[in-house]
Amino acid sequence: MLNALQISELEEIEQEQTQRFKVTDVNSLNWALRKMAAIDAKIKEVNGLADAEIERIENYRKQELSSLQQSQDFFQGLIGEYALKRREEDPKFKSEKTPYGRITWTKKQPKWIYSDDEIIAYLEENKRNDLLRIKKEPVKTEIKKLFRVNDDGRVFDEDGQEVPGISVETIPDELKVKVE
Image (cartoon, rainbow, N blue to C red):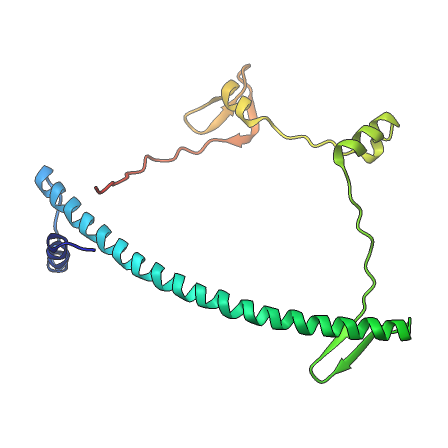
């Protein structure tokens, strides 16, 4: 909740934005940070109110969807029983259509389940390297330690040879403002 000083700060901001203010010394920096603190408090207040409403609406959604999902599961079960009965009566039964939808039996492919460690051991033991894939990738942390960077962003190895495929982009420092 905003206190009276913060409300006053926010009102001043609206007045000050019409004229261009400059931070020129510690007092004007303090003034600007005070304004930012008031803005941060207002942002927290707005977010708190919005979060409370979002939570209330999400609870409503969960309640309504839960009830609807139970009804949908009930009808799915009834339809499943009907489809099984039709399939028992006619093993070639594949589908049925009504104005409101369609039920269909679809053939599914078998799912292969692998234990990578066991299959790799088996393939290596039986000299089936044709069924193994070896992944190559640079060890970037070691490259950063061993290679050096020129001022223009080019990278060179220990022998002074330029390394293709690597360039270094200098990123300027970022100013962070922390309001307390």
